[in-house]
Image (cartoon, rainbow, N blue to C red; front, side, top):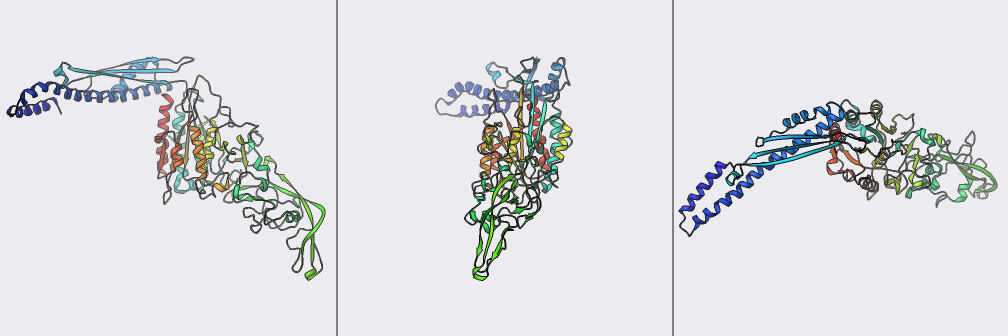
Length: 586
């Protein structure tokens, strides 16, 4: 409502009051008119001034951000700041109400202990429409914006789903274009670096496991417990744990197993998850009986475990003893399935077959035969970012000989290989090559991808992240993308590769890890990590929204639900733009 319209409204109201014959209405209204007019007018003029100030603040913020970007990238010098600030602000601030607008700039160059700083101050005024009746012809307002930058470095960890479902709907190709394509995230972030190392990126492809590289078999942060143990003492397999002997397979029966014996690991004997192989080498062929000749004579090798999707990395050797026992007696007794020492006497009901017995010794494969996979850490450190401590095996990373869908995904000879982790790097071409080499593999375990993304950011950690300077500000960012819900991890009872057990125990582990990371603070009390999460939901029917991904993001605006592959590119572009702002201003 303009002043002229408002005055006409009051004039009509006043005429109605003058015709009113009841008491002192006209007199009362005349007395109240001026303060009413003043209050209403003040509200209208204040609203106009506030709108002009809000748009001024937005323009000033953007101008300050662009100035700090230009200075950090060297496209302008300190001498250009005043002119450039005025040009940016005038282009951005278009309020028709604001008059006598002025902008000042204060620039402080960085020192050995402080970062560069720009402060923009702006002021203006509006010509009042109502307050001038009370003697206030104008209303002034002002605001300011500050950016600090310079000694700020960015570390970005990409935890990217490489599971089999990424092969559908063009998701893997879209992801590769979004990250490594022309104008993709790597190009966006690399452009922010004024000096080599200002911006670094790590790559963590994940499925059920991650591939840290077989060359690391000499590292002391590897946990070889699972690797060295036979099925009887594999840790944490819960209801899927084999037991030798067990209710269906007695100690006496186990003692009889030797060269030539039928494979004792059958579903009928309670072993439905693994059988026997021809030797200790990962990938040896399956056999129905224990070898009785050759290099592996008497080797009892459990081989592949379909419950844990991994190999047992060793065999029992069998050494013959002097003890002979009855294998069977009576009608129907024969040496079928017995070891090579079996001999029978008598006939019909007096038949008796005897065998030698064997002591068993478990011999683990050489660690140099490891293909590079690691599984989740032993609880509770599966949900923490603590660095390895040799005296605490729960902080080490378990070597795993992963196999799923008849493929050893970490093997260099695999037809579809789980890509190896790339530590923090600013070799942009190498990073792009690694992203473009990613291939869809097995089942989903988002937690292990997140856990290793954090490890890649820890200075002087297992992945060799560079030392952080105490005088430098670091923006540590994790981007976690997955196209499915969690289905498996190190513990077979938690999930079978297709779905989780009741209560979503894999999600519960990940939720705890997310909570721990979000609550981690730096020396200044700020959040140590900024976490973006992306769910690519192209399934039909659609998967439910992943609560664990949604809650893992640092804030609600950092969780993205995508329903098509094409959105992957635009989402990474959005994140890249946000990180660009984070790089030059805080």
